[in-house]
Length: 432
Image 1 (tube, rainbow, N blue to C red):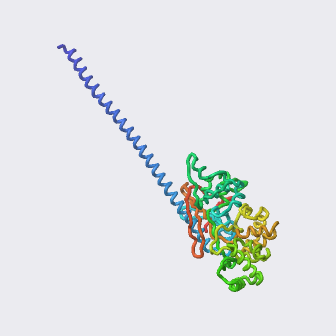
Image 2 (image 1 turned 30 degrees about the horizontal axis):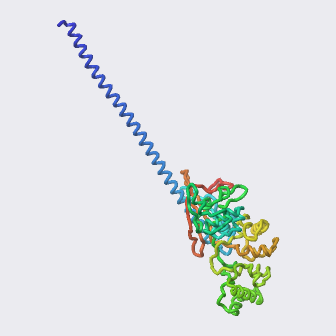
Image 3 (image 1 turned 90 degrees about the vertical axis):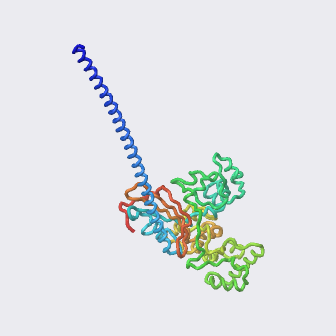
């Protein structure tokens, strides 16, 4: 074979072998690039997942720390309520917004701060005790008032516009009325006719959420802290024993003749199968003057229990609540507010004497006096906690009942909604 042909064959062989090697190297390069891309994608994905987990863990930690801070505010508020003077309660008390050092200021604690505020539940109307007349004044609609009572009491209220249970049963997402005491005010949004506007209100008028409470309890004691005398506790007593007992405690405000008239009226009511249901009956059944009833209003009661439900504290209630009470009016509410700004009421007799000075005073007194008090045992504590480094916050809303030895939690809930901002946010977080 010629040398030239041999050389060409050798060159072709070497070229083919080099091409094969280059092809293999190209495949390896592609595989390497693919592996690098895959590892990069996996690294980015893992990094993102780890970052999300870290952020979630951080958010969870912030929320937990915020809740602990909020609970610190709850404990402080409970301590203030426990050591507060219980002879009467007003907005000027250490827990109230009008005291010299309001509680509702940011307080540093640990790695964050909390804001707590206390509202008097007895400054609102108890939704589980209210009657149709007061509910109608609050809602402005007798049908809505009847629907609320039907939801609560499982009664038959034609004003509601029909059988309520059937109405709820045919809704797109049907449910049944509670037919028992409401546990939260939010339940009202499930009631027929209760709209968000009615529930939340607006800048011109408060909503039901600001006027009502699910529980209000107060002590049935006079201004000195002594238990009031119930005019219905003497069913098995003799007239002589009744006279001695009442005169021993009310001799400064009642004459012997007036005590005997109370007994005669009580005996007549018992004979008719009933008893005193209102202090106003002391005028109709016992013949006492309105001035006498006003003087004795802080010492007498128709309830036999030490703890009574549904009384409204005239020292803390809003004008809208006061105006909605039986026998009340906007003028009477304004008179009460003006008086308590100058001097909070200490005794219920002070309230009674003021009511007598209003237009239609005797009628206002007789209808309203049984529904008011000057002291409270139920309070709503709202406390918001927030860490300094985190964005999360938690708000604890607690209903408490104050006794002589403790402030017990009745209901508690947590949420992520903040408390309303202060009108003038302080530049420096204060220390208490």
